[in-house]
Amino acid sequence: MKVLIVKTSSMGDVIHTFPAVEDARRQRPDVTFDWCVEEAFASIVALHPAIGLIHTVAIRRWRKALFQSGTWCEAAALRRALRESRYDLVIDAQGLLKSALVAKQAAAPIAGFDRRSAREPSAAMFYTATHAVPRNLHAIERTRRLFGLALGYQPDLSRLDSGIVPPPGDLAGIAGRTAFLLHGTSRDDKKWPVEDWIGTARLLVERGVTPVTTWSNEREKAVAEAIARAVPATVVLPKSSLSEIAAIIGRSTLVIGADTGLTHLASAFGLPTVAVFLATEPGLTGPRGPYASTLLAAAGGRVTPAQVVAEVERLMALKSQAPA
Image (tube, rainbow, N blue to C red; front, side, top):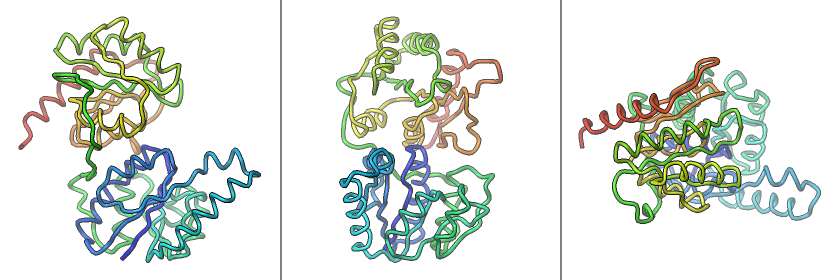
């Protein structure tokens, strides 16, 4: 059976889908999977060994150039590629109108959330089979349940395994224990103050851990350099591709991150991961993993470096006690 997964974005949503793929790989070894995803996240999808062909869409870019011929040529090429692949089933794991329209291009039966379960109820109009999955569950569990209903098995929700492995790479010559600091995020109200990142880096160095960070734009570069100036032991990596950063994260000792997709990636790798949430509620979409933890700022309050490092130490001790 040949199945296409449609989960185009965001990075965190893509990563939340991996446990469902891992369930299906165990329960339905007769099924092969391809994936349709936003072009920016293709390298993330490629981390799962069960994924074959990766089709890319560029909805974010296409919206900015709707009247250019190149946009329509790319969309037509995607439509041809999806139809030529002759899928037996498409699973729209996103539940949005845009993802349903992408799924429709494959000209195959589509399974998805029913009207009450989908994030956008209108998406269910495009599905061949709809499935009821409670909205009050974490996104990972919702997707696992959807895959089970679509493919005819009961997922074992007592275990959580993303099935992904870091891409080839190394820690760029950095020896000893390392903590990757993921300070960059898309919204200003999600950003932990630079003073708190500096305080955290100092506490890590006192404990023999080397802080490592990077940047993807000039504002993030300024933050990374400020941390390094205050705590010279900090290693600032140059701006790098997503797959290069994924490789370094995957080989880090621990990760501390804001509410950003790479923090979800760290938890999916099974690393001790502390996520600092300031403006968003992590309940149904926060990082999940065997050694993942979220610290949420109370209304009008803050998360302190001491709290973060204490939680890091707790997770590290927990991991050290786990069976090999």
